[in-house]
Image (cartoon, rainbow, N blue to C red; front, side, top):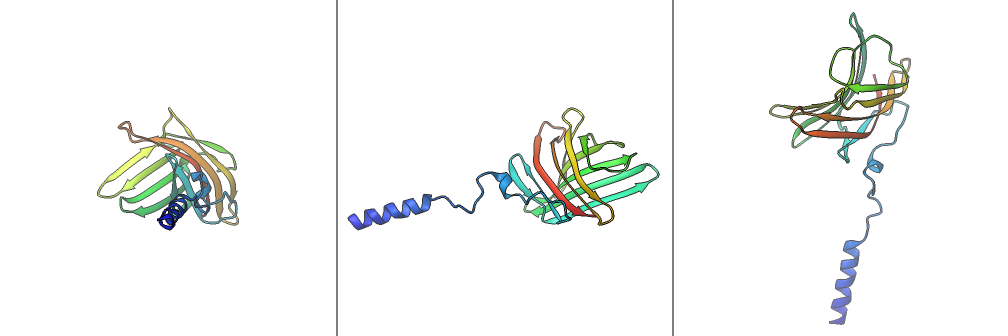
Length: 173
């Protein structure tokens, strides 16, 4: 009986032991912030890690209306394709290493967007009321990559709000 009790106690202690490999803080599970074109895109959405595992992209183009700058990361799971996008639409100046406000989805603005594509589209966007920040920390047009960080709050127009924090990207064009 004594051996059984000791065995059960050891099993209980072992089952409750901490897994030292698992990060305590969710941000610790995100890839490091880099500035070398490492092909990374990740953030926390309402405190939970979002890793782009499908179609990480960066683009920077010029049309007669101005520059369009876009960074996005997607993942595919049982709910569909989920995409976080940071976009500067019809921007009049060259993109520089600085902070940009993520406001509403309009020409001349930068904005943040989150969309879930399944049988339809559920979309959340940043707004003028609660602007976020896109920080371009490195843009190298010769080497063809852009790096930075971001955070924003987005809503779906029906009162549902998501918070995007600790975002980081290091993508090739």
